[in-house]
Length: 319
Image (tube, rainbow, N blue to C red; front, side):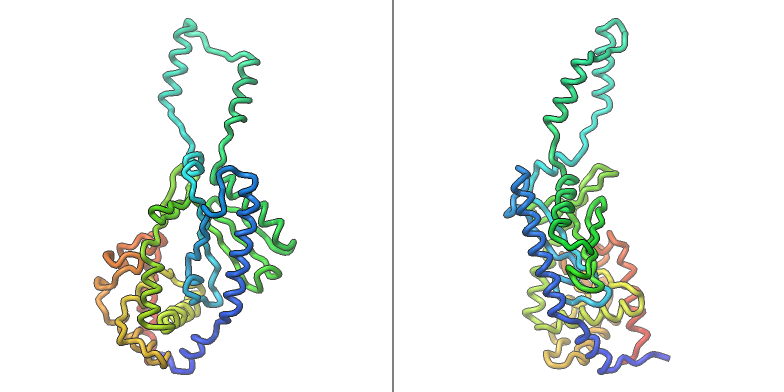
């Protein structure tokens, strides 16, 4: 027997979040990052405030957050030198050939550097020490620690930092900042994988402009639908679904389905449309030329499974 998704529940989910609280956390983060980058720019020749960008990455961009939402941001520095410095340059065969030639010239005796040569070599290495993305991340952590209260905890990971602090942000808030290089010409973030010595590109493409277009077309109901889907999914699976997927699903719904005054009616229309439409007809909000199952930001997180979970969730209810 199917459970009832009645008007009271849907309207309650839509009104359950505190917009003022969300905006306050977001404002604190932007002020914090601005202060931190300003301090770093005074000591680093590679970092400039106007060349850094802080971009909301998940549901905090639309404001469709739930109790299980994290505050995820991408922080990018637009500097090709930092990108170049971050990658370890190794040429194994060139090293072997150089050692071979040295031993051959010395009558196949092992070449040994003198103590003076070693000191000169070490000094040279120290003098050309390069500012890398990992240095940028370390500097951010150190500077943030100076601005946050002692009760806040900062965790530094390979690609991001996480912050938990009730006194600074509020109860239950977790902030993730993914730190990378930003290509302003292509509008692409690049996250560095130190284990593989390579950058992975994160391309939001037309996502933000398409969100703004849908909001203009459908009003606040577009965000309301994302918020309700997030809340229902979190209630069933104890986490928020992939936002590129949810935003895409609601983005595909025709304007005629959105009732500007009735949240419940709009949800019923949207839910039934998503349940019945051919998945091959659903396009990505990042790139409408791609199907949702061709979108890297959905496939890359194995969140294509979220689609079947959403459909299964909707099938369990009657409206």
